[in-house]
Figure 1 (cartoon, rainbow, N blue to C red):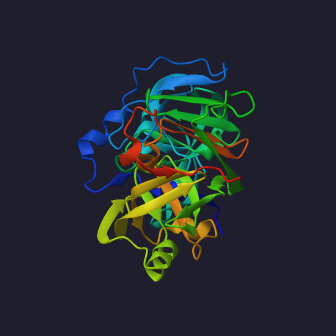
Figure 2: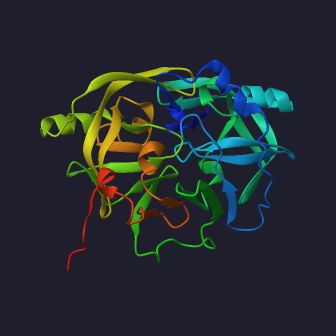
Length: 330
């Protein structure tokens, strides 16, 4: 039986209507951002413009570039676009089976001799190759590059930091920061203290998906409890070019720790990664980048198993962004 490389939540990278094919080629031009010294933690980079608001980071491959790769906390593997792999003449390696949102697909891999990004260097990796048209970027930086890192997304300033988990500065000293503990499952961080409309739900953060995705177990539980939103049929395109069709609606309340998000758009669908994570029959939610952008900053610490959420400045009208902040008991 062939090897299966699980890519998990990278399956949903663009919402309908899809990005025009001409625009999909633009990110394959090297980014104008200067290279940064990866030996100085935490390294700081500017988040590049993205058609669907996903977060990007300049990547050098074997000293060439940089190209803006998408930071994808939902992908277990770093992925490269076919066009860029051909442009760099990267040698082919193996045929592997990958798992996207729409199921299994075959993909070639290429040998990447050296991959440099702010806060890290990886030598001799084997990266699956997918079409840049479907990725919407020259590549994805996955969990194989981030497992011991702390990724801080500063949505207010448009900057991002990647540093070692032990040495990176913390946000938790800020009184407006909410820290949520998480547990690991196949590289993913699953938030421990979270629920949807008052029902306990496993929530994972997926920076590689613009949209938030709920499984059918979550949809069915909401319907059974008369807590489901009005649902409409919608479709999204996967990184393998497949189409995922489901029902979309706005969830009234998503709680993570002491903060409640309200009116969160979610697509409910039978997406393959939920089964891979053992959550086919358990309510689960992949929270996409559009939902995370309501915070000023989000720090995902894979080394410590924690996620820090920094709330917006008090001067901002948070009434349209939050249902409220719970006060600690006692």
